[in-house]
Length: 169
Image (cartoon, rainbow, N blue to C red; front, side):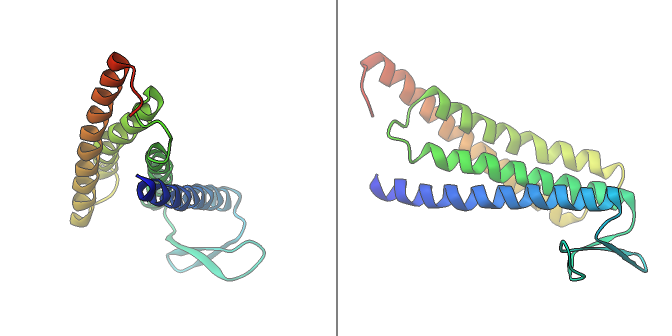
């Protein structure tokens, strides 16, 4: 169990950093676009530069539809994904695994992974063409959600047994 705790702690910090980077990138891109700062327009592309430089950071199409459906929604959705994933990893380095709080973290993760990618893809399909690769990503999120659902059910059963037996597992 010691190895699991070490690995989950490392993955918790990595996914926390990734969640923060995704969210900060989304906020920076949205603010740059809305305030028209740090932007360079070239042909049909909008280039968002690093702060206080002229070096390209994000290269986007110049349409508002592209900005919303191909940049902002995916970047914030993956920020949410990594934040929820870091909470899943947090579950596995706790001293007591079978707690209501840990089950809530697992439940949030599987619900978001089962429903959000499908809903966002359907919503986006009304405004943008959907690539076939996106369907593979949606299926992977569904499988990940189902796997964590099973894990959540195991944790629920463990919590029930723990409460019945008054044991610490």
